[in-house]
Image (spheres, helix red, strand yellow):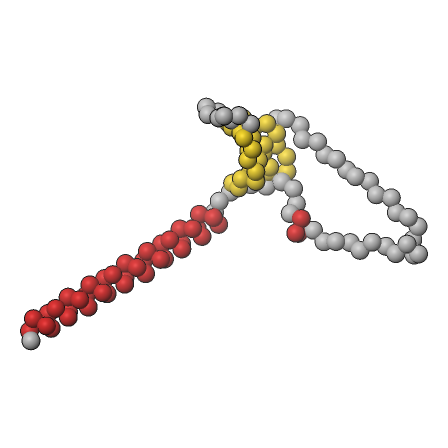
Length: 116
């Protein structure tokens, strides 16, 4: 009878320790992912390989968009500009009715990115 009680206590203690380890592991994995993404200041927008060991990478860094040339031995800034506005943040303006106003001409603005 005494050995059964000791055996049950051992099994119960082991179960509690394993449950505690499982809960801690879940919290650490969840907190690690959210914390690193929230504090990340650099996001890779696009990457294009141009050779066996070279590529062009577009990154956003603290409100600035950089075009980088990346090789096996170096990283070179090819161009820099302000980060473009997210299309989802823009609001659409309804087109005026043709009967109310005359035809409206629109101009396209092109901003070139000069190498740094």
